[in-house]
Length: 68
Image: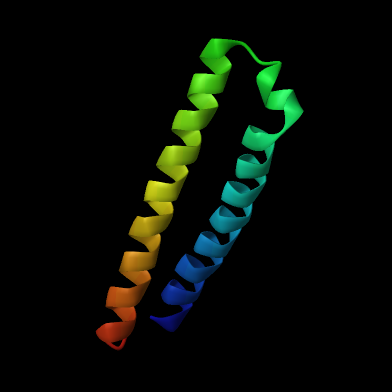
């Protein structure tokens, strides 16, 4: 089962990297050049990615507590 946890940990790390880079983009000058529709979608995407990361972290924590 540890390989399953390892996969979850790797997925969370990759997601964390993507969240970081998207957050940088959202604060940069190129973001302001996008249409309002695209800006809103990217903000929503970032929010959902963060929520997904929280779910992954919770699953990892629970699996580790269960000793799997």
